[in-house]
Amino acid sequence: MCAAEVLYARKLCMELGFTQLHATTIYEDNTGCISLAQHMHLRNRSKDIALRFCFVSALIESDQLTPVQSALADNISDLGTAARARPAFERMKAIMFGDRR
Image (tube, rainbow, N blue to C red; front, side, top):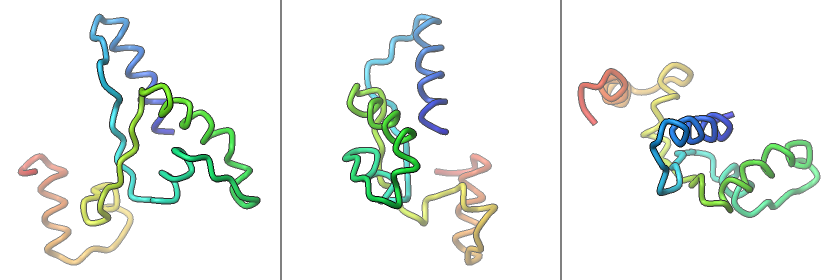
């Protein structure tokens, strides 16, 4: 879970003397996920994941985490899991390998 890794990294930075002054931004392309984490709108179908989102929601409320909507076209993690047209593939590949931003 990304939020747990962010919390671990923030604690590690604090132990090393690097105080975190602002919330860590997490980019998410799923608006439902962001809505659940920010507002805890639980329905019968989402109650099984309530504990996980309570943890994330607590991090958001304590200003340690900020979820931000990212465009699907900018989601580099989809490069290996979803088919993309050649121009989008080439753009994502260049970003992934650090050739451009």
